[in-house]
Amino acid sequence: MNKLEITSFEYAVSVVNEIAMKKDATFIPFEIVWDASLGIAKARTIIYDRYNYPVLNESIRAESIHQKSFDPDAKDNDSFSFIRHEVFNYFKNTGFGRQNLHLLKRPDLLMAKLLELSKVSFPNDIVAPDYATILDFETLDGSMKLPFIHSDSIEIKEPISLISKN
Image 1 (tube, one colour):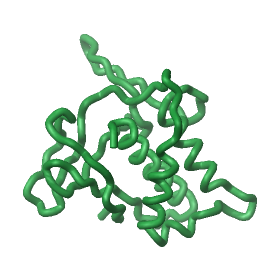
Image 2 (cartoon, rainbow, N blue to C red):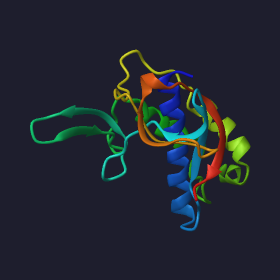
Image 3 (cartoon, rainbow, N blue to C red):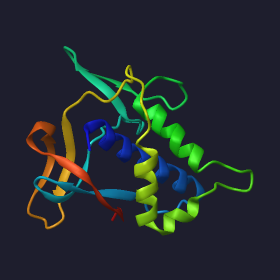
């Protein structure tokens, strides 16, 4: 998977978590287990701002770090808008509730569907995250736990499972 596919899948999982938590406040969100060059691990490839919106890009200023974040209310030409639309359309509200939420009980099928939904055809001028950091990297065997890794130092190959956050 390339970087855009990885961040798209991660954001698709985030959107499903958002939908599920609005339906059921006791829902425990999913997190992704990745096959990475340093081992089977949990990690994040998306930086979120203080309002929990994904950050598209960052720039260093004299006194601060400026973040341009995704705005779910705007109709921008960014990868997060495309993925959010795909996921919300699949789990659309029919008037009697959201459809396809039964997949929450089958994370294996949910993961397959989210992989499919996150492989949309993006236009050439799509705005996508431009940072090179992998956050909260932790191997499942506990041999490595790092707050961040530069993405050139590691390859995230593909998601291998969805697990409930503990």
